[in-house]
Length: 252
Image (cartoon, rainbow, N blue to C red):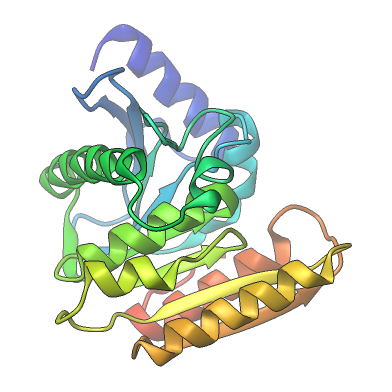
């Protein structure tokens, strides 16, 4: 890691209230060399791992505040910061929440973007597993808002790696999941949605979750009402679900 990365890691540690030696950054050599922030658990033993995909519309500072409470988990954390690949953009201001939601039939840009995003995440995971002591039976993927779609697709296509996936809002495409995992094991999902000013979106989301269940995926659905401080209720649900699924302890 160069000096810039070292300084960035120190800033991350200050934002999250952590010791600097627990926070590191590395670059993945693909296209625009996006960065990944990793947080090591307070232990050198193998621990569960939670990989959190950066929602497109949030700045890094905003995202750090959203995931601040997750650092109380006795687990490794990894935050791939961004990816720009045709129709895929987990770190900028467009795509996953827009172009992807208009998917219909055989869409070459969609498939190309998905392939490049998958290559990116494979490289990220290879580096993360090399750097952090990880219990490989307890690796979970979290996608919030615009990153939820790719998180769901990637977790299903890599079900041999991920033990489960957590989605906060965002879009689901069960028909694509069926193509990606026709014979693979069905990993569990936690889907968290909010009933906001557009109830039809919640209805559509619920229907897609029923489609997901129809494919054989175990789904825990949590419906929250109205607005709240960013991710406070969502965070509590995520921690509770992970505590049950992965046996992760929480440090107050």
